[in-house]
Length: 98
Image (cartoon, rainbow, N blue to C red):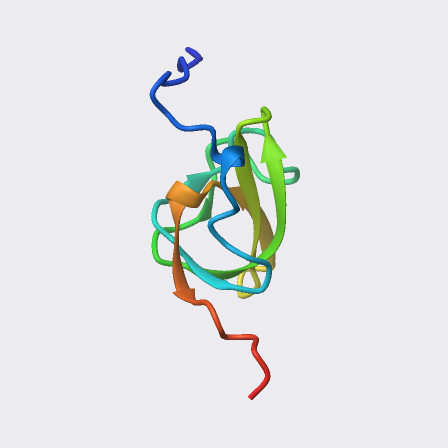
């Protein structure tokens, strides 16, 4: 497998605040396949499909450049790490007290 070079024009996300907060409802903007890092599933297997809904469970970092959001796709019982560009906000206030 050929490695992709990082785009030098891509901003360092960690210089800003995270795009999402824990508990926010988000939608996947693209399919996510197992790249070999998700245990118990074959490599190349679809983990998440475009349009599926999940909740931000955790926020971490990757390569000291990017935020990685642990998204709980509760209906599939799976948590997947995704970047902000792969997600869109559905409901920022879904967990606020009524």
